[in-house]
Image (spheres, rainbow, N blue to C red):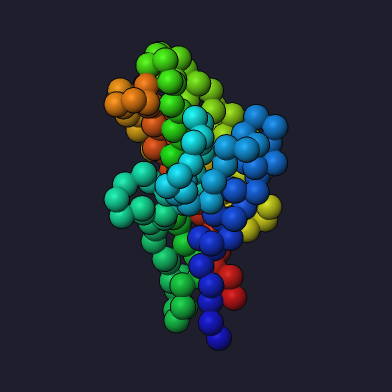
Length: 153
């Protein structure tokens, strides 16, 4: 009998959950942004902003005498990016943290991701800020959603 990881379902659930919110609607992306994107605000799910594009990392657990993994703990990489064309870092940072707060609150309303997880919560937050040539102030918040779930059989 085979088993399936819950990582793909968790990414799908996060995209659906956040996309359904009026606060985040229109800025949620499954994976990295398209290269030609003109978005000034974005929340990417399953992408860490790096060159290798790490989507998720985790651990599989085999309980007792199990021959296949029956539980997994993993972190889904997510990235909030806000570009302020006027170069105002403070405004971009404030907006980025507003979006992070909204994403956290929305996730707290469904910590099981529609029943596929035992628990899911925002963890491990990292902030970067820079001025981009011909672009303005770019603020990025890399964060993970920690998920604890049983594998699917």
